Length: 395
Image (cartoon, rainbow, N blue to C red; front, side, top):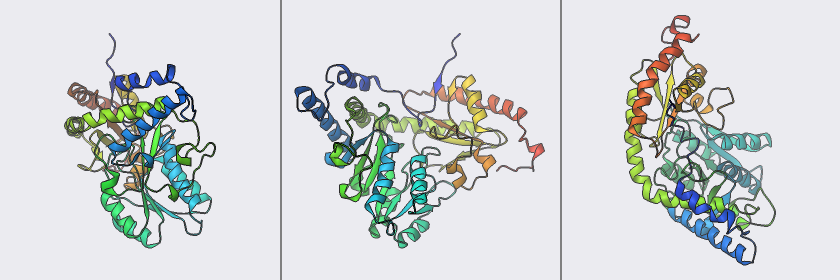
């Protein structure tokens, strides 16, 4: 008998929607022109490229010429931080990022710090919300760019970016948000929030991998990292991935119809999952209890390692993760969870279950049914048992 498979790792990636595949297919085999060429094939590719740009920009209430396509969200995040640093004089440049940013922001900031740029790491509270007083201190110290993730990729906490952006602009500071996890799941308008830069990508919303984009309010505020033929308004040279861009736009088009009803459904499934898992002894929720992404449930389990839970669940046909897919093999406690003031042993006992549009209540019921058995078995084998540590050492 074939074991059923339940995928609850939608925060790492999503399956490509069949309608997206259908929209992309002609641009692989028939309409395969280079969008920079002047022949019929090139003109057709260029037309598809700009139509896609307009559709995605419309979804975020932006203008088409404010959207630059990149090879990934990681590239877009690198472009913001390093492009800003190249634009500013080193003595003047001061970048502030939250302590729970995606690794592509965090590692870019560390690299810039090694080059002599001033970087400030902004603390968060126990739920992962940015401490606004710390932000204001950085702004008073002449921060030139602030980067704060919208919906955290691990714990799902949604930041108050409208307040954060407003505070930044009171000090004439540029504001960037990595909206990869939130874009297409909850409404976000660059016009309403007054965002200077916003990173998005396709493969988190049922589109293809290998295509991202960066919203840029003022193209003169950064310099390009990749030089060449001057593609993408001179900010990202390289032949555009037309099939990927077309697929990205189709995925966004589908989000326009599906986002709100799906979010409502996923919140119900998420809350049922959280309630069921928290009935297990010595299990705690990571992230904000209510200000969290509709599909995210992140837990920490006392006395066992998150990786062990992931492997055990995989044997039960449940595909989950212990944290960010970009750092899941690093073997270290998550920097996001450590920023919440959790001890390393607490952080290493975490599990992320992220739902998507193909999950059902039956899936959630199965996970709730399986989890107590898995936890009991792993705790029986664990060297981190309460008897071998101080009583109640993990809260």
